[in-house]
Length: 351
Image (cartoon, rainbow, N blue to C red; front, side, top):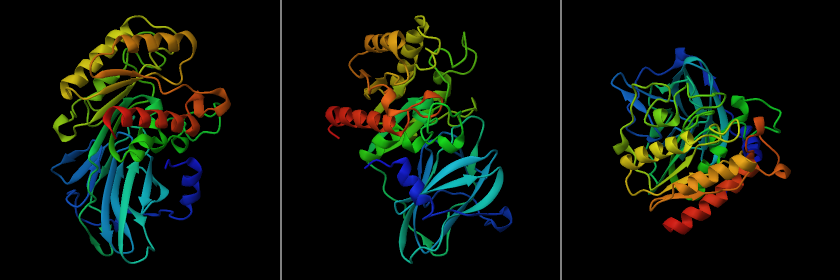
């Protein structure tokens, strides 16, 4: 079943998380030996794991009544804590501190997942210790057999999905990667998900640009840490079974575009196919585009179809369903898009 914003809000009070000062932080380092890591992490010899992409997660099992971990960050960052299916928010502050993730649990075996919801931008978060518990850590949960790679912009990152109307601006409090079409589909299909998404980014140009100025998705796609060009991801560490590419909203921010968008998309597809040959790729039409711009993008994506590359229209935002912040998809649109993606992957891949 899909997680809804109402369910998450209702569960906040059930499993509220507290944080403590770094003075009480354990003195060990992060080894990652008894956890399962989802997403792109840069693990260093000095005993820490750095990450930026939304949806990056750490999952572990423990026997006891409480658990926590030390996290360092260079900015305020929102996380989701899932303890035995009960979900709450955790806000990580600037600096390094020990955070209690669960407490007051019934004695026994528990499963906990900690997921970054906030976008990359320039905020780097780091696990600097392994999880701690008043009992003992157990073997980590088994990884799902299915894997999805989702490449996208603000829609895939969850910009404004929890907003109550188009009038609200961007805020970490209303942005939630776990409520996106990609995350919801992965949950329903029991698949691991790597999300490579950056708000405002395009294949050719980013939002607000007449001509390209900032790094495009082709440049950021290969990075372990989204804003660090020296941090390059080892593709052998994650081999997806399906890839979605939802890029184009920002290339079309002024309406129609030149052939540069199509040429840039072809370059992106070529790069991804070199990394993951024969893996099915789904080119998603932007739900935020309307009229001639939407027709043009759909036609260009259709023109790129080949044996392992498919155009996929998950639907557009319907005015009657409302909007998230800055006219982004809200939970209704994201859930509808997720169901369309689920149906297609089940049909194509026998999932």
